[in-house]
Image (cartoon, rainbow, N blue to C red):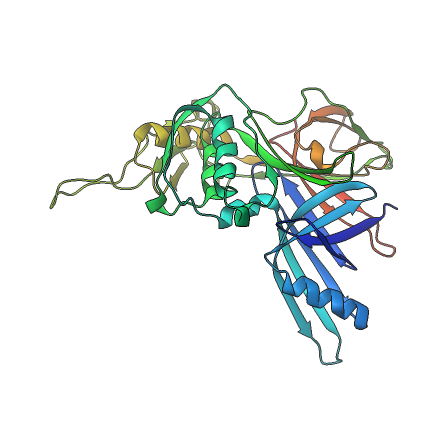
Length: 370
C-alpha cells in the first residue's frame, strides 16, 4: 500500500510548517480547470490539536503538498478550514483546498494588458508573471513562454476588474484554445516545483501505460463507467457578450456571435437543441464567434463522460502525466468482443488509502472512448 504524507508550508516561501495527520483525503487534478482536495484532521491529543490550530491559522496563506512515496501527486492552497466540536468533546477540522491555479482566480489585473497578434502560449504565462510581479503576490509558479502557433488579440482593462484565472480559462474555451495546468514535482535537490505548462494539447502522442481487465475480473483496470449526457449539449450554439457603447438615448443590443450549427449531428437525425452562453466583458464579434465555435466543438450532442478506476502501482503513472494517452484493454459483457482502447485522461480523482480501505485512482477521459 503506498505511503501518503501531507506537508503544510508557507505559501510565499515554501518553508515547512508542519506535517499533518490527515484522514479521509480525496483530491482531483484536471487539465484547464482547478482541482480540489478535501480532508479531515481529528484533534485527539495536544499534538494533533497544535497541528489543527496551525492549519486553521494558515488558511489562504499556506501550501498543502500531497506526497505519494517520494512523488508529489498534488499541491494547492487550503482555502477553507473549519474546526468544530461535537457533543462528546472531540474536535474535528474539515479542510477544503484547491490546486495552485486557483490563486489566479483570487488575483485582479491592476494594470491594462494588451496583446495584439500574440501567441496564446505567451499570453497565459504573461498573465501569471503580472500577478506575481509584486513579491507579496509571488507564490513561485514558474511561468515561461511556450509557443503554440496560434495568435490572439486580447485587451484586458484594469477597470473591468478581471480575475486572471477567469481570463486564462476563457482563453482556453475558444476554438483551438490552449490547454494549461500546473505540474508539481520535486527537483533533484528536493525543492518543490510549481511549473506552468501551456500547449495546444498537453501530453505525449503515444500510450506508455497499459491497464487491463479480464473477462473474469482482475487486472489493473478495476472498474469503469460511461455516461452520455445531453442536458448541456446541443446542435446550435451562440454566445452573447456585453452591450457596445452607443449614442445617448440610442437602444443598443448586446453583441452576439453568429449561430454555429453542428451539421454533422443534424444529418444524423438530431433535433435542434440551442445552447447560449454569456461572455461578460466581450464586445468583439470575432471573439464571440470563437467562443461559439468552441462550444460547438466541446458540447455537441450528448457529451460523453467516461472514467476508469485503475491500479497504478508499478506502472509509473502519476497525475503529472495527465494528457498522456493510455491503453485500456477490456473483456466483459459490454465489451464483446474484447477491446483495446487508446484513451486520453484529462483528469483524475484519487482517494488515499486508509486502514483497510485501498487507494483508488479514477481516470477521467477526454470525450468518448469508443
